[in-house]
Length: 160
Image (tube, rainbow, N blue to C red):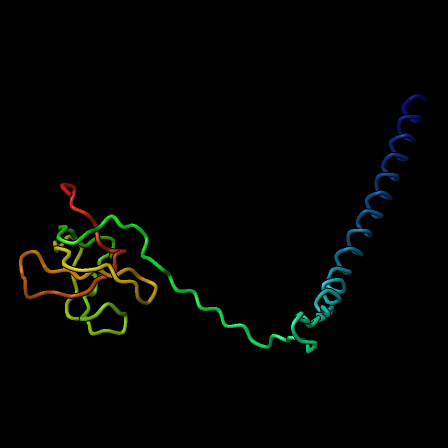
């Protein structure tokens, strides 16, 4: 007799669990299928921008700004670890080498490609151009190789 009581309780428990499972599954499906509709509504929505003209105190005519040109020019080059007459070497090029250029510009002619580990002496600079800091360098063992190089691939000698 007692076994049949547990059997009925277990049957009721199983049926209740299945009903809860189906209801939760249905809720999850409804939520998942409504996501694309919600995201389409968000994408279709637009913002309204209202431009309120500024009236200056000198004139009664409104001042409307139609174009803004922003030009940022650095006033100084950040403090550097390098200086003129400092001995340096090339590093961090990943085997590609560093292009030594005729002028301090990426559009300038490459006059030499220095390999990692080659030694140079800084003879001029720094200059800020093309978003890089440039130094004029001379090859340590060949004074005919003189040009401009980007600071990013110059390394100090440990003795400097």
